[in-house]
Length: 113
Length: 109
Image 1 (cartoon, rainbow over the protein chains, first blue to last red):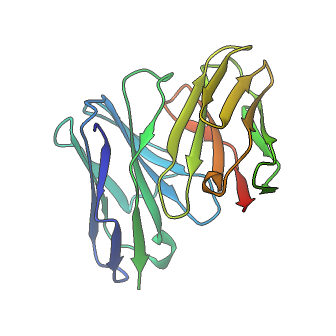
Image 2 (tube, one colour; image 1 turned 45 degrees about the vertical axis):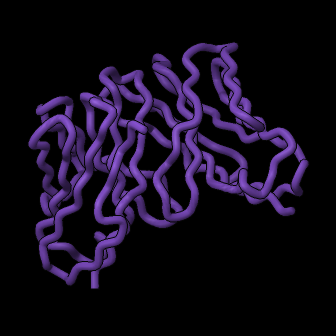
């Protein structure tokens, strides 16, 4: 089945220790997204790629970076995680246009100790 | 300003007790409306896209409808496995989704 895969599902890191979360997709979608979701809140968009074109949300902290080396893979790098970065991180994809629905992966739960 | 509001915040149902969730919106130029289901600790699962007023979509016990100002998600004869948070979202100009706060549905056996 075509899908969005995230690894790892659970990640524990120490305060200030860099961490990388990964996402892959078999849908061959052009657009990939990274969201942060905290408890009882709606997902908050961090950035998205339209193909290789990177688009950062204005309020995304500089601590968050992303890479998309090819169509299938996208990475979220958190350079110096703080306690406030503990959250669920969701990867999503959409086919092409702004009207296309987004398909989400299962998420990575990040804990910062 | 574009806004998406969901009600109620929480809904507790007895198994078999049908009900409806509401998603009201104000947006300049509707590009569609999405419904998602989210289980605790998981990513949102896509359910429906509605593009124009009068459109309806169905999947098992769920039926989504759309008017010019709101969308309803009807749950017919719910089962405990229908317990989840249901999110509606509108696609914006900049590929961002404007999410409602969600309705958490609990269905008791």
